[in-house]
Image (cartoon, rainbow, N blue to C red; front, side, top):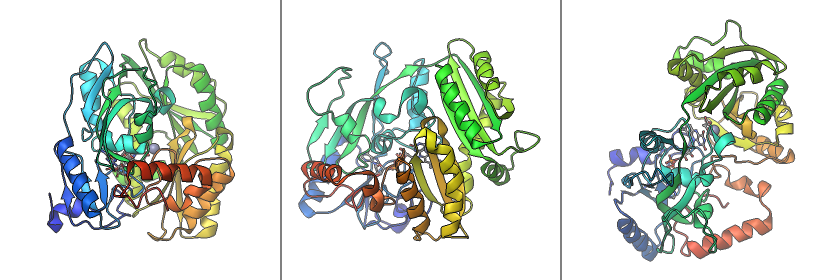
Length: 435
Ligand code: FAD
Ligand code: MLT
Ligand code: ZN
């Protein structure tokens, strides 16, 4: 248990620096039994808990904004042997994504979800947020990878189903329920994960487009022609320039273009030619840079992945992670920057994201930490277009006042009933998800 201000400091503030709270103590169980004891003590004394993994969450859901105690799961780092015939592995909730990726790679396999916070994000946190990431278009998100979970519910009971059965229709499916529950129902202690094929060949290209409409159309065409497509990530020239300035990188092309899509395919045979043909067939394509080797691949990915870090150099952003129906995406990207500056002329809008699944990250800088007028404008517009106010980061505390835009009163009341059933004393993340 950590109680001194120095020890608590990094647990009290989120990755962006926007959400800062206070905790009397950070408790760090090293086993499921220790966690049960903590939850029992908190239930008896009505002390609220914020579960925390790698603290890379982006919606203020993992930091103690209401003086809760922080329960850090980072010491739950047990890893099982990879079962290569079932293509599964069991890991503790505190194991990082990078460690799972390395574990799978050493067994000739791969964990299907990837995101740039891989060195810190934990499997427990990824389950709690149902993390999406860059390979969603091929493999689905976290929910699709979780075969079983062990968790301690708010009631203090342990639910554990780590046997690895792929077919198991015996009532309610706890892995699905816990995925995306943001620490409000139970604390995940371990998970049985699906692993996928590690392809021997990978092709990566950065494609420049003249318009967002062209870029979105090209991605739809690639998706229907290329089964091997793993990633299609969009960013704009303003974001590219910001990344290049922040990290002293040379731009990928001699002249700038309005829109870029980073595209990657992987297969047992070299997919470069097939990817090249698909890219060549795209209308509105202006230029293309192809990675020749792993170093070149990493260099192209930096232009996309370093957006998050580069935007943070401008001060804590408001991060609105949304999904749109694909046919409304281009319109959304055109309207949003104007709509935001109509609300606040000092605000700057940055757009990038996982365009293959309709997920755009709207980042707004230059607005006050607690000034939510631009958030309200964007999220309301998302719902008018039939989108979701949270694609992959969750609701947390940041978006709870807008959850009703996406969820009907009947859905909200069913969700509350589940919360009451599994966490009857309301000790697990009581300030998250529900307004
Ligand atoms: P934390 O931040 O510690 O917690 C997140 C939430 O989960 C909180 O509500 C917390 O209470 C709860 N929680 C944590 N551990 C547990 C547990 N064991 N049991 C129950 N509840 C728990 N997200 C994406 O989806 N896709 C991306 O591409 C992506 N890229 C990112 C890139 C960067 C640079 C950063 C900083 C973040 C990114 N994220 C992305 C967001 C973040 O990495 C994910 O939400 C991740 O799943 C959080 O994991 P964590 O261990 O850091 O969780
Ligand atoms: C990403 O895709 O880079 C992340 O979800 C992080 C972000 O939104 O900044
Ligand atoms: Zn993302």
